Image 1 (cartoon, one colour):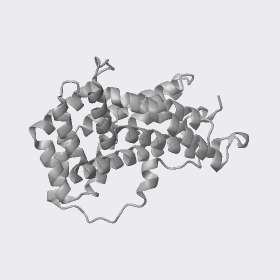
Image 2 (cartoon, helix red, strand yellow; image 1 turned 90 degrees about the vertical axis):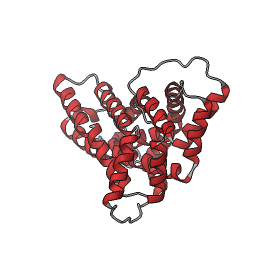
Image 3 (cartoon, one colour; image 1 turned 180 degrees about the horizontal axis):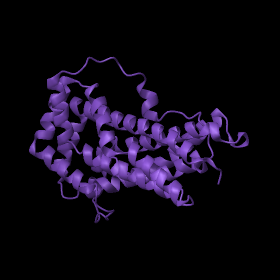
Length: 288
């Protein structure tokens, strides 16, 4: 459940770093650890239909709409000093590359190439179940809602939601997306930076490492608040059953494959957007 406003906590720092850092950026943690993708057979028509059903049952569309909305809003606000023409260019570039429909198509393609048929069947069984549908409804309903305080959640509920965050990789995926954006922006802006403003590879890697460390806690807190809000009407027993699915082989395959696909889709969009932004709006690379 990568929400736009949680991503914005770190993305503001990414924009500042983009204006002063070169291209020798490290890949986000998830991309570094994954390594090259294995060669997979082309999915069958049946498998493709199952993937489509899974994506329709999952909260992915709402997740990507929130993600795209958060990125678009932050890009519009990050450089308020731009004139009306340049702000319009930023708006159009952001809307084109961070369109939720395009992101969805990329995630669908990536997930379809990473299918484990047995685990796909088990994942579908969960999302078709009454409890799976109920939890998904609550997750989707929480995406467009404004931040709301959760009234005194118990220590047990907080601990349970923390486990759900860890098993689903919510905070880690939000951080991976932000780091992917930072990396793309820094890489593309580098050729346009004055020589005296550039930093070494080691310096940039240190900056990225520090940004990840500093960004994790606020993003994790925001994600936990979002999840406490989304699951407020669910019982501990229901969330424990959800945790059981996430810890199963099917749940581990689904969350890993889905989070990887989301990060990769955002990385592609960030790379394409960064090229256009620094080319069409040169002021974005000026020092502050």
